[in-house]
Amino acid sequence: MSLDHVLLGLLREPASGYDLKKLVDERICHFWAAELSQIYPTLKRLEKRGLVRSRSAVAKRGRGRRVYGLTPAGRDELRAWLGGPPHFAAERMAYLAQLYFMGELEDLHQTQRFFRAVRERFAAKLATLASIERMWAAADPRYPQRLPDEDLHVHLALRKGMHSLQAHLEWCDESLTTLNERLEPTGPGQETAAAVHQEGL
Amino acid sequence: MSLDHVLLGLLREPASGYDLKKLVDERICHFWAAELSQIYPTLKRLEKRGLVRSRSAVAKRGRGRRVYGLTPAGRDELRAWLGGPPHFAAERMAYLAQLYFMGELEDLHQTQRFFRAVRERFAAKLATLASIERMWAAADPRYPQRLPDEDLHVHLALRKGMHSLQAHLEWCDESLTTLNERLEPTGPGQETAAAVHQEGL
DNA sequence: TCACTCATGTAATTGGTTACATGATTCC
DNA sequence: GGAATCATGTAACCAATTACATGAGTGA
Image (cartoon, rainbow over all chains, first blue to last red):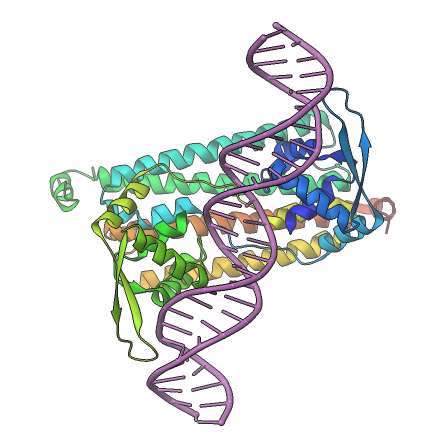
């Protein structure tokens, strides 16, 4: 039911389904994704429940638009959700399932390649968030200490991604170091041959 | 389609649907959850595809069991999945959506309560993982440097949770500090009254 | 006898994705 | 004329959850 609340949150300013999709892709997709084919029926459902109200409008380009806005009931629903307990859902991380069972392959080089690919992905995401933070800082000299309270919450959400992705990178680096030690046990001096033998190479 | 592969991974040792549910809840649920009502149909589907084979068995207690085991085709499928690229899916974090829009409430005390609840949740999860790591260390003197390669992968997956949750806690602490500074701007000396007024208290 | 655990399943519903269908306008 | 963008939707499908149904044995 959270897409409902995401749309209510975005609809503090009136918008069409198409507009909402763009907002989701630009700002929300870092923690919630949605397709147009899900957004349109959701808006209809919200309108039937009296949480939003729509009116037809003319578009500058293309066909007519349907623009939605929050009703007082919609605002109440949004506030009740925001004021309620934090909502957690069990995350599904397929890449961790792959890693968990990867011993089956008996090939640490494959594990190494896996971690390099994972690291690249996380690094790209972190770079995206970092560039968003730079844009914020450039656009608002109050960032972050003196941000108005409303923007503060967006800032705090952004910080979550930065902390989290930084930790992911550290995990990848730690893991790659561990793998390296097993694959190249070039310890001090004459142990090398024995260690190589021990590792089954 | 990942539950398919999780079950294939677990079925390197034969097990019933009921057994698999227990394994999922004990070891896998940190990155993939599944209900019995999903596991049973999935096993049937995997058997129809020739990836597992079942036989009836007698249970010590209760009614008869159906025990599944991997077929060679199942093992191939598992290995192909493990050897393929890491699979990422867009995560949905409803609590971040709540935070993102929480400026609407115009109540930093509520945000504070929110972060305390979030922190508690993450701390509990981290404690769970830490106790798992302690059990590993107690049970196997080789942990973690000299673990056999197969267990190494499970160890690396566990480390992901530790890094990640630690970062979540740091984010909560950073956020609570930020909120505290805004709510109690007890700066050097006589500013206090003015600052309190500025915050609208 | 009752609660609990072991054990297997189906049905209904929800939440979400992918594919498909349509139509207007603008820019090259 | 054709591609891109703006714009709204439906249909089919998939993954997963919740609720429901059944049945056998164990221990208090």
